[in-house]
Length: 284
Image 1 (cartoon, rainbow, N blue to C red):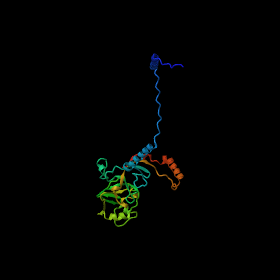
Image 2: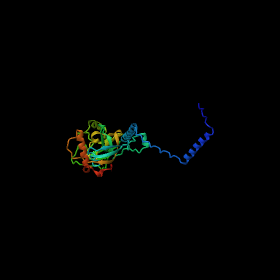
Image 3: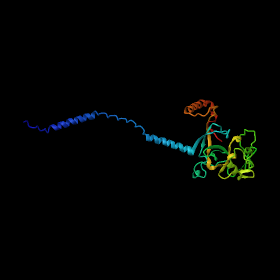
Image 4: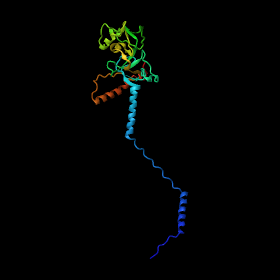
């Protein structure tokens, strides 16, 4: 039987020397490091997209509720200051003070005679009207042959137009207590009787007497009463777009296809119906 061969102690240094030589060679010729792998960007999770969308909606709701809101003019009562088809931006912060604590910080101001305001219609608050303020609290209002008198002084109104030559006893000579005209709100007629002094209507505290600039074709305070301060929404700031009414006698579209066809027709007609000269016009 062959005996086991013991490892020679003299052989170990030779192995170590060989390893050292390999290490020196490795240092003389370093192996280049591998380039880091680019990680592909993980897709944005659905929850983050929803949060971003929700944030945008919240900001939009805040702006519409407290800062500015768009309206379209549907009637001729404010011509020629505002025309049918005008699209206006309403500054909802202009009169926002109303005694609130923020009134000392933000640039709020009181409503003055001659201001154009948007407000919730007192008879049906879900509807919005736009008129010009003719009388503020304490003012005494009277019309004689279409001329407005405030506190006994004729009111200068260069923005007013009278298009009808006929005379209307209620419209042109106001207030009247000897008869009730067609179109006059019954509750207003009864309330008005207690507010007339010496033939003049006295505007109570916290209310405004308003009229349209197209004075002969305006449903205003002569027919339904005062505007309470809390009904005021804001001040029309500018006309950002305006379209003439289309000469379209077709009945309103009922189906989705009809509505899309009508929309396409409106878009095609924009070069003809747009009032380019009214775009971005300030309202005074």
